[in-house]
Length: 100
Image (tube, rainbow, N blue to C red; front, side, top):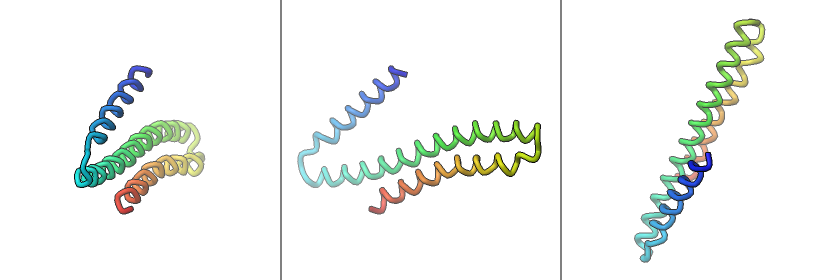
């Protein structure tokens, strides 16, 4: 886990150094547009990955519980919907970043 975090920080630092080298205003404006698209992609991508992981775990637990007691379907399925909402919030944040 620590190696992944250190490599993430290294990549983040290299990306920041690349954008810090832009000296003129036109290049800075162009890179600001690129950063906007990158930020929207990261917001949507991470939210969808997290939502997929949540739906996988919650859905498996809900199906296991419903196989033992079918009356639990009304109580278990809304939790799957809540996990899917993570993806929708990520998409909303991405749209807000793009159209700001």
